[in-house]
Image 1: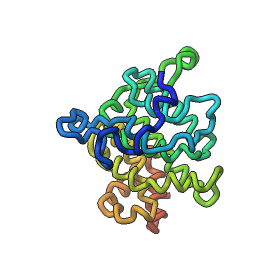
Image 2: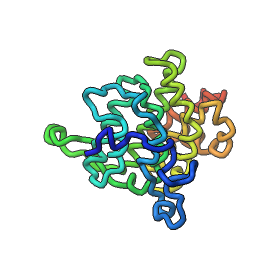
Image 3: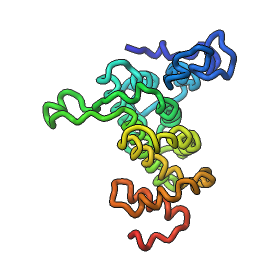
Length: 250
């Protein structure tokens, strides 16, 4: 079990003891992680002072660094429960918290890690007894779904946030980072992964900060808007934010 002490920064954020400042995790010559996409989660966690941020329920749920570390645990059951904790504590009741943005930064950074291809379920044992087992899904799909839903919610609340405005804006300020992490997944992996990645990209493209990324994906947005799929409304919202005439789609 990970403890808070395990995640306390003991080096300059973003660096490992004995490494050059600014070096990327897994970038050392001969590093296996550089070739297979694995990231060093502890290096990522060192970039945030977790003592200064919190999720909704610090006295009930595990601390945010524990949840994030467990997303890359070797046990799929631990990974699935970490995904559930992520969803239930970082944006509970649609409120963004001080830990939401750094947690989302971490999630974006691990999307390419092969450990996110593990099939998980976020249903706990008593729920399986009551409701039956849930079909396992790739953790990567779950993380993308969380990120996409969070982006939609952040945009919806932008004019009237439920919580502190700075927490909401801190999340949206990471939009370019979310885009760069998600864009490659539009054309790789399972169909579920590609669809979940599009679910992240569509709301991101509504932001003026990503206006220069719109043109290459215009056809994909139009195709999704005219199709009868789960992301249709999300695509229509994107076109509307661009000033497009969507009357034929309504």
